[in-house]
Length: 325
Image (tube, rainbow, N blue to C red; front, top):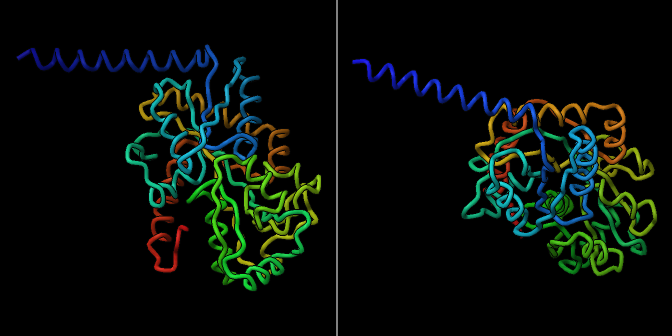
């Protein structure tokens, strides 16, 4: 008769010991360099954002925060690699909207973001920018749309892969503008930039932060930005909305994830440190200048947004008017 109470107390003791150990590890985290895995190449907006945050977290943690780029598979390769790491907080994943869209558009057989990743924090949204080669004759979105209609299917555009935010924003622009162009996905954003500047690409909708330097230097021409307001760093570039195109909301979001099974005490510690960095006035100002709108908050905010975005894009993809090509 005593066996069950003893077993119950033993299980409770083991659980308490495990919780105590997790809390202790969270209090001393990190005691070695953590790593943040990206699913996209160097030089883009997500890379810029991650390196800014990694540098600031490194100061806070007194550890070097390693940023590792693992592009490919429309973002699935890097995300799956991060998810397969030990759930000890030392491998994190900076994820983007592709985590949600890939579930429907580019599913991976052995990876599911809800099943395999633990949400840590919703970093925020980023403005998109429509760019063309500097010598292109187009000065407005209307110019580009008119030229594309006059040359059906001859123009091409870049993205970081099927289901990426830029790809989906371009599909929407083509739907709204009533034209078609050829999709040329890239795993190297540097190669895409080279092809745009040389004129081999006709246009590109991408997140703003990673391309400000080229826009300001006149290497490429920006025709429009998404969002309700113009971008702080390029105030002369009008929004899509100002030009009569209903691309109002930023289509790109970013969030930090850990491998599923990471102790909640550790998730809470990392979440708190990210929130502290994001709430620094200098950081807010810097990221705002790059076109980011910060969200932050508890891990549940990221979890809820991911689930809602998966459902949203599954519904969009089921529409007879939608084509992922």
